Image (tube, rainbow, N blue to C red; front, top):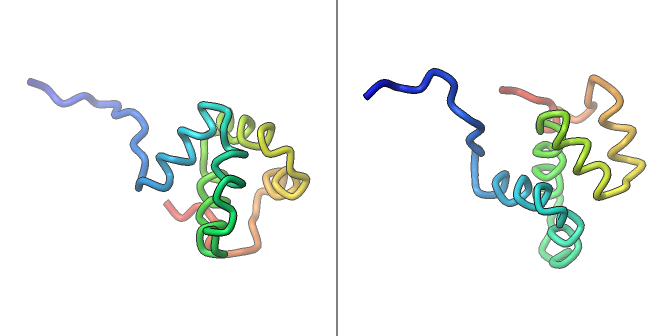
Length: 89
């Protein structure tokens, strides 16, 4: 057996897998607003970071599903003000 050179996308953790699945199934709004009382600032930061680090096509799908002016503005700029939202891969 030989190792495949180009490994496909692998989510970092379960939270990222849930967000990507919600984006793919067009249920990101449901994912956020169904259990809004469970959301903390840390989870919201992780959600934003996950959306901002998605590949461009999936990020556009997420923006279209949420229809958020805030998300539109923050994805237009190249530099994010909060250090936890920066892509530090």
